Picture 1: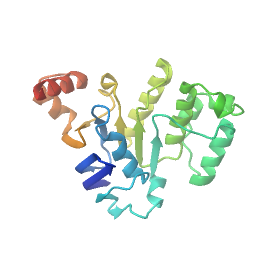
Picture 2: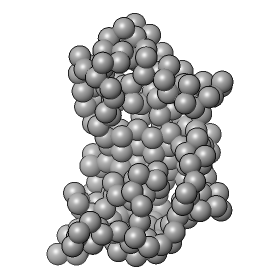
Picture 3: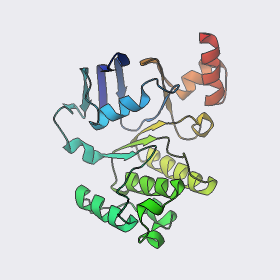
Picture 4: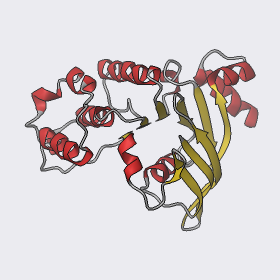
Length: 234
């Protein structure tokens, strides 16, 4: 579904992505993890067309995304920090995005679970970080995308809101969608993902199934398995 080949990106003298190649297919739920500054967010922004790579290619369903935009209609994106016009209300933001996406078959699970209908008149500038995250989550899932890209999805959410979101991710994973998650909270990934892509210093160190990683490290938890890998690299 998403094929990345020999991707490179520099910002000034900083070589952020170094010959990245990875394949992500429908039905997979993948955690993209690694230390701060390893290139995770840049990879995501390249997939979304927000950053143009210096070299290499990205294909979505076999077609290059360069100078393309329609493929984005198949992606639901939840940023780590959602930024919306301060003077717009929650209701106006939803109506604006609905107009842009032009999707009639709406998924309102998170919208209803977070009771956003009761907050439609609140301006975005007045929202807490957690409520803004709820808006971002509802928008990411609302248009029934084939691909979900979730950047630190539970950051800023309270315990109940976080569990609601994780249950929704599992539900969509079971439908066979491609789910790509970045997270520093490795303990939350055990029930959510089936594969791990580990990045460091702008390169992919490994791409394994969760079971392969556990077998290789003799650990039962993803967090402990990754810690084991890091210890072996020291």
